[in-house]
Length: 253
Image (cartoon, rainbow, N blue to C red; front, side, top):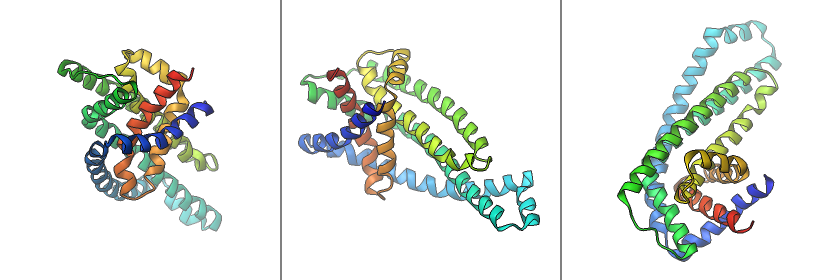
């Protein structure tokens, strides 16, 4: 799996050279600007509302009152740290939902971008087919619902674990790895779909190459630490990098 993770990370550097060489910038900036704007607005409102939700949760289960009575500095530290961890878990959950909504809306653009990438590196053309495009969109929606269902199950489990001292400290990391996997899954499936893999075959293939998905999703996340520019570049870079990493994996066997 480590080899696949490295391949996926290296593919981002390859994607940067690929985009510059073939002048694909318009396919990067147009969907990227829309993504960045929606991400920022949604994140702001979700962070505020999650704070109220955590406060309500702690009041209902009596944690806040219990902490006030204990008046212990060490327990107060754990309480504050736990709030921060819960904020991060909720933020991951928001990002998961936002990601799937945006991927569904942007699937025609991302499918085309992945197709164009493969057409350039293999020197062949994929003629436009409206019927196939509609089938691809339906498939993408089905996979998105499947992934969001499983990821929600994992996220809820992580949320429960986050209440356990010490164990709760590592829940954001576990959540991040799960998020990276499903994000990379979505990006890689564009290529699997084009190579005539059925949904079940795509799930099985990506399951055997979890490192490609995790590595792709991990860099996608890290790009969000670069304000504005990273948010703009992240989605399209992830699609192209996923296509290149899958191509490299197939041809290096």
